[in-house]
Length: 608
Image 1 (cartoon, rainbow, N blue to C red):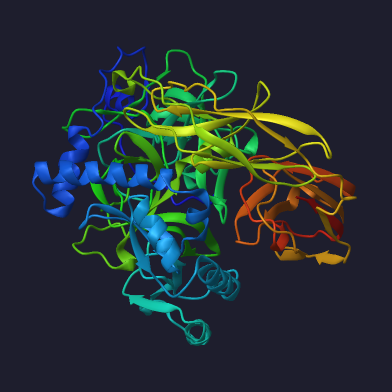
Image 2: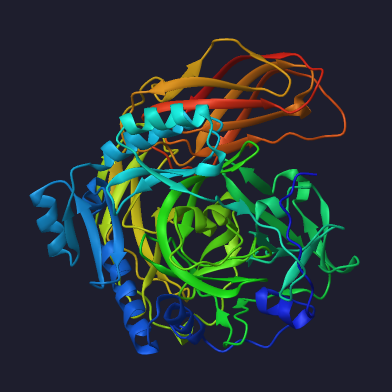
């Protein structure tokens, strides 16, 4: 059984209710302020501030997010990064031209002229990912440092080998910053602690993350993927297999602990259990979740865990990869300076009253002025919600009944034979805009956090009418924008379908990587299609993943099953909610997890 498990204790059903579950229906929580006392006090403690200074800093952070959302889409796309600078209280935009610097200042941000463009950083980051491959001894983290305008690599000096030195030599030739530490993070386990656990079968406890519902209204909660790796495992609210809540990883498709991320779902199926939007803050008034958000570098964030309790810190990196050893590499995690200890995995990370992440791992110690090796990591929660089409359980909304204004200046920015790209000016709201919904006629086409979107899966040479509505965290929806009329281009005879017909042998306990290279520009479709033709004696042994040009992983098929069945022919898969560049090298990764099998990948194709 492969789990970096939590060893926790069940304090009381009341404690579990504070995390998102209760054995009986709970009275409605009072509305939370925009910055609850727990967050203000946690930030004050983490950064040595007075409560009034912490409140001022958090208000400035809110304004930085508002400014970021309102910047022109083209400027944001060209920028080499953005972050909240607590010293100045401003959003900072890294740009490579004087014109973009002027535009940033006109939008209310500070401009930082840098030498490396976003494309430069992406190329170096891609090159480092390629060098890392399936892991290098001692190398535990790599990704873009937007404040340093460079790509950084973190190395545990106690684990270096000759292979590490060879990698570091090549990395330095790429202009990469190398940071050496005396430790490295891990997915956490711990001793018996009080808190709000859930119990996977007869194993040690993990933390409840956030409550969520699916399209039918069925109840679930999100947690760490390394806590939910066993298929159809009973989930309990206490040790001793009492007080069953439901089932973890139903069907074997609701848990990921690999390159794609560390996230899992527990289905809440037993009578009497209700979801709550309240978060346990151990001594402070509970925080009520009002929505979800993406964290940016410089943000002050807090997390609730069974062992370290309520801890806050600063976001140092986003989209940074980690290698926990043993072949476990996870990409696109958020790294923070907040303290965490064994027993915290799966718990919730917050930005104000917004859910931002699920606790993944850390050094299992609390230190002052942590180095790159002493940071706590979390899985962005929006990715988990989108992957399984779940809706976060929220409450309160701060009593907000005011709808945002209608998005202005809605327009088309490009078309292909099957997609239309749109942009609009940011809406305004008395509290803050949480996102935008794009409609194709009266049908919801897509939802985004920013002020641009691409609607894919359209018919060639066809006219469409789109509108955009803004929504806030309390669920208030704006009037529709003006109608945007657009016509897709004539069909291109399948020019957006790529394929590789080369045969690749599939061998026991090995991986196959079959690449295709795209020369397309812009974003790929939000719904990708993949066709895979394989001859293999045991389909159940195979795990199949699509890797985009940035290394982002989309799981197509998971291994598992009690008996082997042959795979002979083509199977098709769909990837809804994709967010990837169209151009670059895509790869199909096939992993054989079982012994005594033979097989071959005949061909595969990708429709962008």
